[in-house]
Length: 455
Image (cartoon, rainbow, N blue to C red; front, side, top):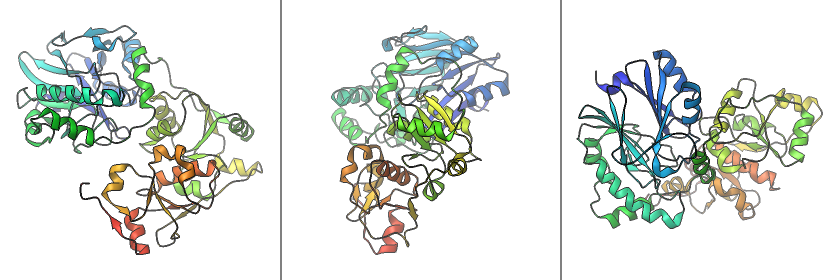
């Protein structure tokens, strides 16, 4: 049994596309790497092994979630390990290139690997002189590398050149060294990458197309060309992580009366309906935003809604309200007013009106203007000819571009329902949400399906 199988516990956040890691140090203590504010899985894994987290390391100032390192320091006395260049405004052990931390039997060595962020560190885990693995954060990923534009477009090329040097530095580690990235498939911090979460230096030297590029200018061009849009909340969290997120328990989601929800809506708050898209379509509060509760819930909440307005939620009886709270809390949403007590049945019982939205399969959908709200890469990979394309993350700013009677579509219907709810809140009517994707619509309506050659 190798080290990773016996001592390394990956903690995958499917919604954010990230992995945190818990390392069993063998003496009842553990090292946590890139843990988010949602520590439920980490605590459960540590409890099963009887571990106390003694060290909490962050590879960089995260943009896609609030770090859980300070919480681990408060609750378990963990020593926080992070880059000195990050100028974090809370107690931590600042590390620079080559600095080492004695883990009593193992050693953690900091490697300066700027690119994804200016202060990025990778952490090489050593047993004596033998490299066991390297926590690469947002530098070397499985078949890719992380984006370099989070500090602004004006610094993207500079950091891409740094990323080139960082990846090639990591490629000089022994071939058998395990590579344990934070960002992976599904992460908006990542350029498109492979589905695997971990790899080895040998495999990346063989398979990573960015490591195959030996010319820095070509590397920069190829990396920057891969980048799509990213959630709006990313621009807020880096500084919050530098200052240090507040510690404590997540806010509870207490019950709200119908009248309280009405008051909240009228005073600038938002109602988020987390029920499945079909349930929202069948009847919802006018002005509510549909964001179905699934692993990606937090991403779309953070992309589409402000973090400084009170939020109320409508959920189904079988939905886990704790999941709503934690997905919101880990990306910095703390003004959670509560949930509608009794859900939509209580709303109707109080004599309040509900709205409906057409949610139709391709064979029943009209042949109106087709609005595709998927990401750019998805759109280029296969779209209905003549479709209007507006990414869901940009729909709020482009409401006036949507023609009347549009068929709103994504890949299945969840994101399209979110887009339609935003459009309807802004006064657009006569919309149909497609229960399906472009291939279904093209087949049902005899439309051409177009794919970019370079996609």
